[in-house]
Image (cartoon, rainbow, N blue to C red; front, side, top):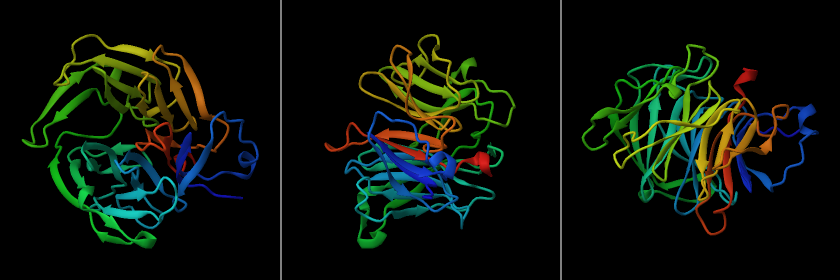
Length: 318
């Protein structure tokens, strides 16, 4: 039996995974209309939470925890699997922190990562522990076997005093990384979540073509709000799809179609610009893509049509 834990898959697709395949499910993978393969398999018990693709095609993966350390990490993965993974940075070990959450590109090869006190077992974050860090990969160089020759330049940008990753998120905050100022941009009832600890509320967010898109994991919805250049709402919120089981992070293509990772549902779902839903890969009863957490397109000529997916190690089995 082959164990795939925190991993990376490609559809297209390629997958980065953390989820074990049981003997029963490993022999019953459904027919998949896309080519796909694991790109990297982390040690059993690792949670790969999010990813960003560098301009050279290398992929940065945020790791919440590992079997050995509950220490937040940022790891670089080669999508062609020709190089060993590089440990880019090990962030400060906060009390009970399981690791970094989101990562986004700010400038060419410069990324921002959110770090905070988050407990995987109960999906609770602690107010006042969150901060934004800058990772400048322009200074990074690596050698053979995952050896770092010149490290990335990593610095803490600012704390986010009022931030908390938890159920009940009802507002979008804007943080100016230069002035450190934080302001509420959008408050919307579609972001609401009850105190039920089973799922998060707002999970994935993206801005595309004048709209702020977001998923609500607990509500199972995918919605959008028109915004101006400053990110403030200019119109009413619109629900695009309500038939999602555990909608998480997502990516939107040039046609306006969204590809949504659904953690507990074990699937990557496509929601077209018109709101039509289809399954790209995976199924609720199969663990091939168990714990899909995030998805991104490749950035080079070889993989612009390839989707990279991170997975966790299936928290339901903990």
